[in-house]
Length: 166
Image 1 (tube, rainbow, N blue to C red):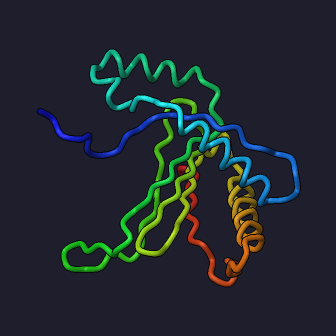
Image 2: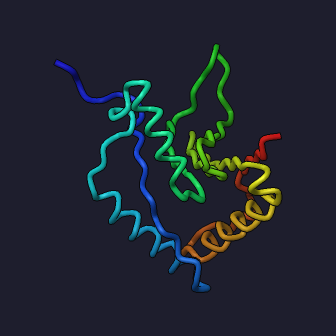
């Protein structure tokens, strides 16, 4: 008898993002409501569907045909610090692999009371990735400022890692 599934459960979920409206809190509430509704729908982990080489190739072909603007992952990491060979791990950063025709990957990762965001981009599709990163940081600052009792994140900058494949 097999126990509960171990490791990551990987599934895709498309969530439309609102582009209009000037209130960052309203935009966040819309995204959260849509995400919660879509997460409530059952979906099978991609890892359990594609065991064979032929199945993986077919899946990759299907992914290539999709119109995907960005892939993202949000990972809740350990709340207590980790150690490697007796040394405390000070920082961790998410790095998402770009597969098929996905030109942009954004990962969020929490670890021991910190929160980091990593951005990976195809340099041909996003030669100005710094504009995206700056806009994302400004939006997060607006959300933090709008939240009741929130500290201004500009006084303690959020780590943001950017890679354009170079």
